[in-house]
Image (cartoon, rainbow, N blue to C red; front, side, top):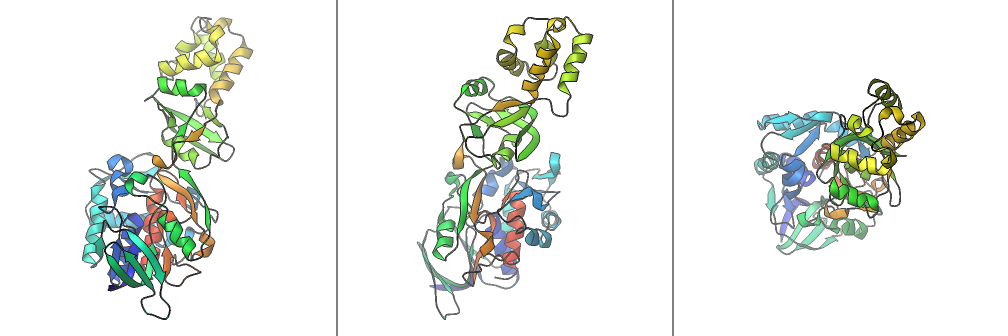
Length: 398
């Protein structure tokens, strides 16, 4: 049995950030992770380049039943604070669209940064460690006993940084939620987020034929709208716009696809009818969209006019076709679920957690950080920012 000041369950982004911050304050910190190595999700993120932050962070980039909860932590540890740490470690990075920052070389650079800071702060990390049980100790300075496959450990503070249910092959489990319930916390319903859509209707065959094709669109439902690429896959739709909208989609709902973002399509078609009257509609649309996509659209929306010159297509028909192309309605059967989801929506109820310290309001010395909480960021580095900010908030007080 070893006494520590702080035990952190989970060696991901938030857990390692919390560990280094607490260690830098002179606290004796132990990180326990059930995987054979820490930071696996960091290594796979951003296609192996790690989209470690975003230049433009606001509370509107996060979903939570309590939208104000994230504000305090995000203000006290900003994107600029983490960027300064990245620059301190001389990690080369580049900006992509929408303010996303990626490593030039490898996601390993971000993991090595965290491990280096932890090592300098004297943090002890143990991987391949299964947690058997956790108990609160009454009237003892070490308030928690953690029983594991590597023995029993005690600490004054216990931090739950276990993540959510997404990507179980990376070691994800519901342990953090079980632990929250053990200490009386309630949970918001969990579901897969930032995840591709699947289809079981006629669109499935279309997506299979177009698999690998990307196109910039407006993808929306009544609650949200994103202008980004969609990617057709053999199961349905992926790509940034689809992943973003999945956070706002409920089973049974339809999506609308505008294939011509920002375009007055009826006016454009009428202008082309005048300027290129002998052209076929598919030829004109082929200037703007992939030919394979145009062929699928033709079969859906204007098969009777496939060989009709523009001059001979009635204006009303062109307006109807424009409506289909700017409001193509699709109805997913489901998402791909936790298997490929980047995040888990829902989680530990933030009403029962301090927004300043991440400490439980129900159990002194117990903290929740990162994805296990009911805070989910948009695609583009925002979930990492929540990991850095929430980990920092807890690391300053544990």
